[in-house]
Length: 128
Image (cartoon, rainbow, N blue to C red):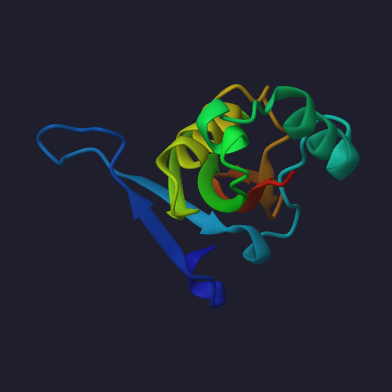
């Protein structure tokens, strides 16, 4: 698998001794990409139904967009949620991470019919 020109990354899932690492593939590099239940439409609906506009930003008419990265594990679980690019407002960043952590299991991605860990990056927008 790794000799096919695919870039493989690693993340440390909170291992204090730095001995436990998880390999992952980028979303575009897998043959079968991870899928949210209900597809892209289901993902958009989930984000819109789950996201809460932070009060302070709403009152001050602030808007923003947070890019978050996360890994869909071979079991479909969402792990390693991180802010990839901040909105510039901590409350937006925290809310985007909260929403992603609430996601249900996805269908795992695969290469050669073998499930693999896949990193995804999605935007969470806050617009008035």
